[in-house]
Length: 148
Image (cartoon, rainbow, N blue to C red):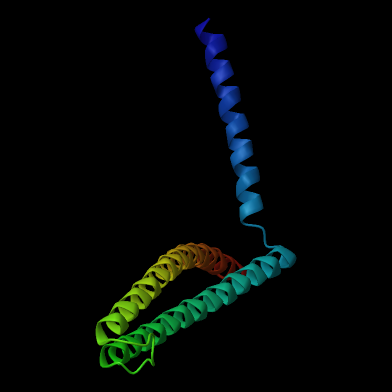
């Protein structure tokens, strides 16, 4: 009983060693075509990473510009430079300006939430692309070490 169990375990070990060797061979292949494919994949990841960085920078820049415009508009509204929002008494005009600004604030808050969500998504994509890049860099270095 123990002898047959030992033989079964030895057979499983041999099978595992064969599978391990097969997987190692697939991983460490010196095939130039596979090397080129991996290099192309690495270049694609690097390109995507650069595109995501530019997009994130553009989103941040647009956000800053929007904030500056809002600050200017708010200042002008306080100074009464946005034009006549209503005719009549000063109180009525102030009330209408307040309502208009409140509505504008709500719209901007919705837009801000959407932009924050986009930024979070892009940051997540950027982290993933960086992780992919690191993994491919390790693979590239390994291939380069083996090739020469």
